[in-house]
Length: 130
Image (cartoon, rainbow, N blue to C red; front, side):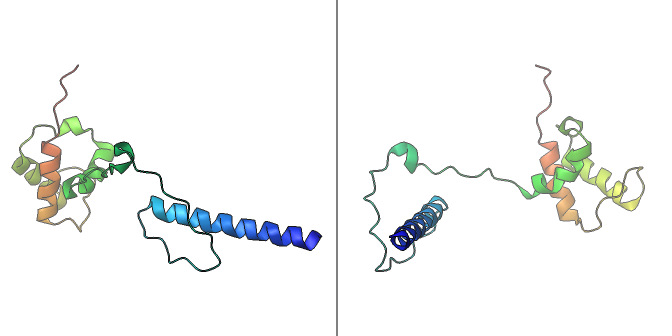
């Protein structure tokens, strides 16, 4: 009798694991694996409502925004807001060349990277004080 309860509990645990896996796969949009003969058929799906049908898109992160994060870890965005991108590129090139007193920029930044950073930083909204 005790062996039967243990086997029943193990079967229940196995079914819960499979159900959890299927729920996790469904949540991340992956297709369900093909059902095997020892699995119970999945429960009937409820009709989807418009609220659950809508997919939430992740925020779009531009190259400039991604590359500017080290700048923004020390400088507030307001420092750059509304400034001309060419002016910002020239300033960053001066920093890279050692002409401006500033911690060094990563040597891996290309001129294109600097232009992306400058475009992102210069496009930041100015603080209106409200």
